[in-house]
Length: 230
Image: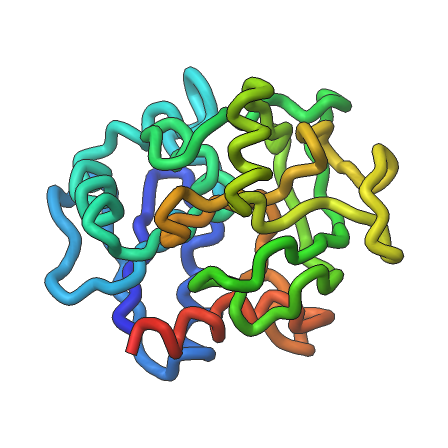
């Protein structure tokens, strides 16, 4: 796996993702500056990390979506290169149009930082093949704008085509308001595109990928990427 992590002004989880990927893959991860006009040759995984790209001015991810490097990111995604957007990266993916919908302000109007439980709705993607379908995992969140919104037709299409990948649930796998940390429609925590090679998720798997961090439920997301890319 030859992974590249895009670094924007205001990114604050780029090194976390780098550490997680290098620990799992056992090889260096290349960091790509937002002002670069292209990604390195051979890049077979692109990660858009969490943070506050460009200070989250205008809307979260709106300015980052127009960074010079994003032209190549979008082009490669459309040619099939896998792209993972985490938190702010998810917001950037919706702003580029690679994923549908938007991430709005949390319903509480407050920044939320805590562990949540997710149900793995799809285990047949590049990112989730090491999980079991309907498995409940624990992953941290840290965001102020994680409230996923899309029109009813888009939501129905996501559900009908199996593109809702992660959903907020309680420990017993129940979908309810109490388990929803931000007001996201249908408790959606992560979705993929039609090719199933672009994933956006609000929770941070890189923050819980080894026992020293308090758990390792996020590790299998990165492990999932290894086999399909070789």
